[in-house]
Image 1 (spheres, rainbow, N blue to C red):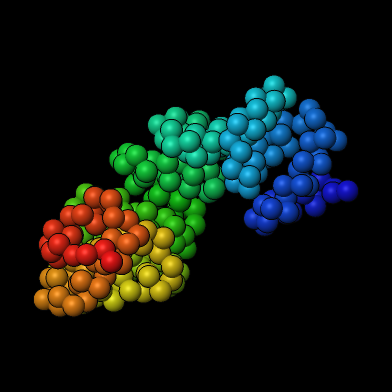
Image 2: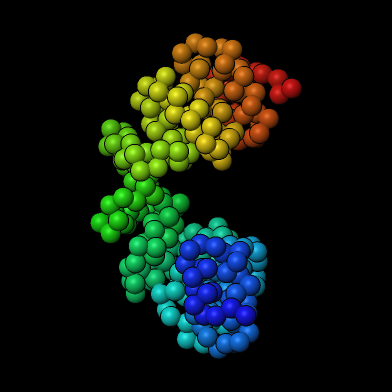
Amino acid sequence: MYSKKQARELYEKGDLKEAYPAFCELTKRYPRNGLFLATLAFLEIEVNHNLSQAEKLLEEARAHNCPKAFFHRICGCLFSKRKMYSQAVKEYECCVAIEASLSNLCAFGEALSIIRDARARQVWEKVLEKKPTSCRAYFHLSQEILRCGDQAKALEMARKAESLEPSNPAVLFQIGRICHTTGQIQQAIEYYLKADKNDHQEKGYLYAAIADCYVLIGNKSESSKFMQKALRIEPENNYVQLILEKVGNLSTE
């Protein structure tokens, strides 16, 4: 039998798979505890990917006076998983208005960044005020600043993120992308390959970007090799198809 303290500790340290049975048990023992119900809803989302069950639990949590900030936070998470980002932003905005904690601001910032809302930059700056060593904030600020066209400042933010998490594949890819767009092709290749080594998830896009870099420096052999990799993984990706036009009509065999 899990105690409230044990369940909370599992949840707070991020051991969600272990926290799930603990909160299942707690909600049976305390079926009118809105906080426990909302926490279980979050675990249904993250552990079981059961969005329908999460929605039902949130309805129960609302009926049993779940703390409002936490309720809006989990609603935002549910909408994000359903790719209903505008609704997610509204929920996170309500959450932050009640409790502007670091984790709530980060969730709000992520949602704003996804829909390219200009407010994202301000939110990530607030995150840095609370936590000056946030790699996540520097990374997102780099993305937001790059969208505004300030490549030098974007690279500065990405370098700060790298100094905090040198093996973060998203950060390494971001530096590669900025170097790529500013004509620093050898550095771009170096960072793209580092991102690949550290298991960057968007492999098709990554390999197409590397192929493009090799096109730009005239290395047709390496360009062809990485283009083939990109086509095997994401043949229908728009960026992959765009780079394919540069490289030439290659076989996917």
